[in-house]
Image 1 (cartoon, rainbow, N blue to C red):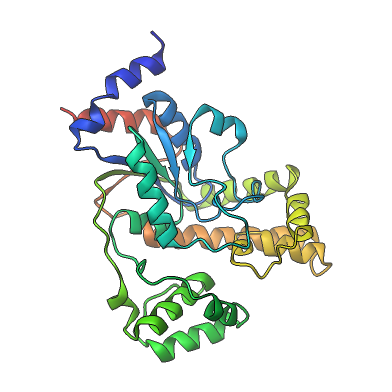
Image 2 (cartoon, one colour):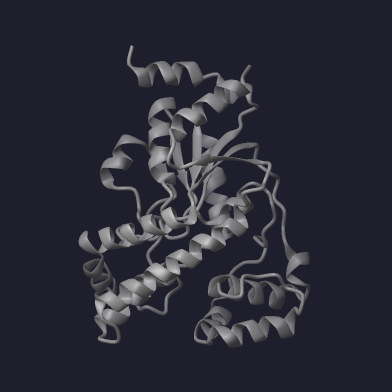
Length: 311
């Protein structure tokens, strides 16, 4: 019997004994979540549900670090390549699709760095009950971020939203406009899903090195051509899908506004800021998260924790 089969057989009753809890893997960008999820899935015969707000878009493969065709052939993945880049896909869509996928999977592993989505799935609160307002979003998308902050402050002076995150600011304005109530009061709390949550982390300097190396590898793998193809298909850089790290910077390079080095430098700095912001969702002192040093044998540690949970 192979080690993978042995592990799968040993863990087969574990999730049932834990009351059907799902496994969730969180952490900052480039820390190694996807690789760990794929290895864990292979060892416990699991399937992966993506909680990455950029992997839902077709034609955006390299810059989103989407699982490769080979990886998806090895382990089933859900919520990948769902919509075109000019289609809307909100947290409400994610909740609907993720819950449908989880209902079909025997041993699900949720993995992703979009904290807003993971929090919603775990029932920690999100304004999923308010649908998207396309006309308002079109109006807000063209505003400088300073004006977005001011508009939200006028509508809801007490709103607690990341002031550097354009999409979150737009969503907060959208929700407050629709409900007439403070953003915090409009937060819907879906029935929480029982979960075992693992977090991967690294010292900041090492994490930044991984982020920088990842973007260098993406460019070497053809990321510039990917963005060129998106633009040629008519997907302009103003689309929400193109707000993903690096896409607008590379689009600016292709239009002659930035050199490739400048675009890459800006992308790396954005990646560093984004990684720091992710810890606002996945706090290192959160007792519900089992934090693991990403330099260690994290999958062995996850399996050991699952085994301990059945005793």
